[in-house]
Image (cartoon, rainbow, N blue to C red; front, side, top):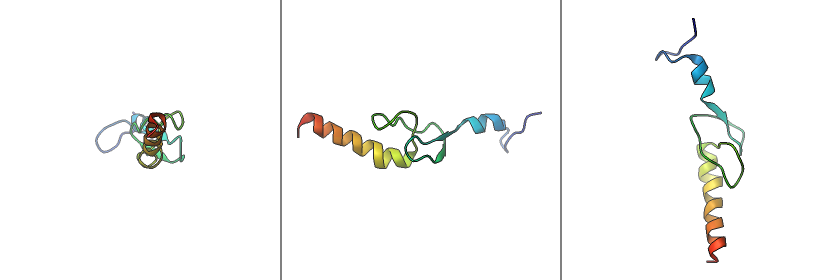
Length: 66
C-alpha cells in the first residue's frame, strides 16, 4: 500500500512535483518558470521575478537600441 497525503494523493507523485531552482538552488513545488536566456532548467518564482524577467527586459532594450 502506497503512502498518501491527507487528500489521498500518493507521496511519490508529490515528491516528483518538487524541483531545484537552476539559479539559486532552493527547492520549490510546482512547475516553476523557464529561466532562458539566463540558464537552462526551471527556476523558482523569486528568481523569475528578480533575475530572469529583468534580464529579458534588459536584452529587449539592448537589441532594440533604445
